[in-house]
Length: 133
Image 1 (tube, rainbow, N blue to C red):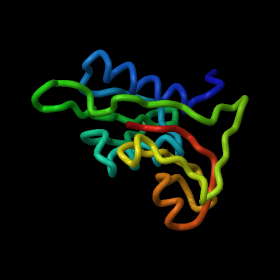
Image 2 (cartoon, rainbow, N blue to C red):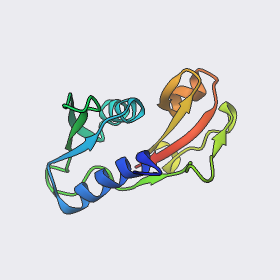
Image 3 (tube, one colour):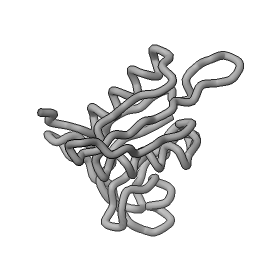
């Protein structure tokens, strides 16, 4: 039993990209699916596929993205911010800028999971899930 499934999700992606794997399999949940969609929309992963399994939990297959020339992973850092032991919340006017706007923060708001820029645009705050750059 995982105490923090989102941290496990981020660690699996981090480990797979650092070792050069093309695809990583992760047990699915609704919030993990939303984070995966955001990573795809922002260009951090190549593609993804949601698969159903026998135990009804499902599986997420993520194709990782690498630089064409240097073969370096596109995701340089994937950092968990809010943990079950210490939740981190931010108001809409104080959402952090990551690498002066080059990275993204993923925020869980009352309107769903979105990037920090989208949350600021919609004027909603929420729990800071992670930073990606």
